[in-house]
Length: 289
Image 1 (cartoon, rainbow, N blue to C red):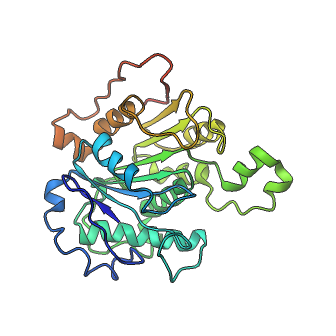
Image 2 (cartoon, rainbow, N blue to C red):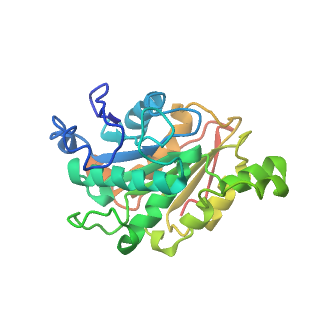
Image 3 (tube, helix red, strand yellow):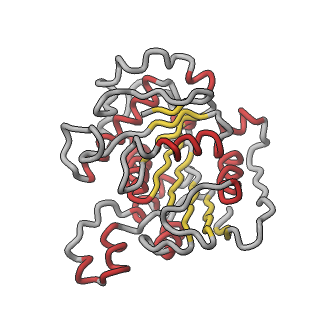
């Protein structure tokens, strides 16, 4: 699924985002790279599929990147129309690598032009992909012809992340119940990898999250090796919050300051980041470095 700048929607009608399967679906996207500053690889939350994620994908494109982005969303096994994969974290990780290959090989974006963005359960595959890209020798799907960049990716954005799924269960049902649940992705451990030190990290979490407690985001942010990281904690918001201008502003400003492709697009001097004027109690900023 792709959301393109200046267009409503262009759907890639394939079950999987394996780049080899999608070679025939990117016709007409030749101009996409020239019109968009960045590509956002978006991993959706639980309880929906990519079709239901279209409104947020459009918001990310328009509100976070002023329309100058392509948003690509791979589907998970067991969701939507995707078939041929087992519904396991390892299968989702393989699909994520195929989606990255599609963005780099077929759409022509460099690694430092691709932002990884995950929400809720999607923070798992987003973080896992970032770590895989930081260790290219370990990645089975990294393109050998990909143009080299300084960073593994342009930035990593995690919305309502969890330390691990089992830790989230423990927060509600205790350690005994958590011991029966697969951790799936250990997000705090993944972002702690020192190979991700140069990848800008933005963590957004609603303070009143009833599904994944705020403490998970705090632990993920504290553990992260990123030398440039920001925590945006949304006052009064719950897990399924909607994006608004006020809570999007610090995220947009952080990305504009630290994603080189956006600096070049907007003629922003490198390494400048000004905390915006805050609406009282709208959000708290943590870890600006």
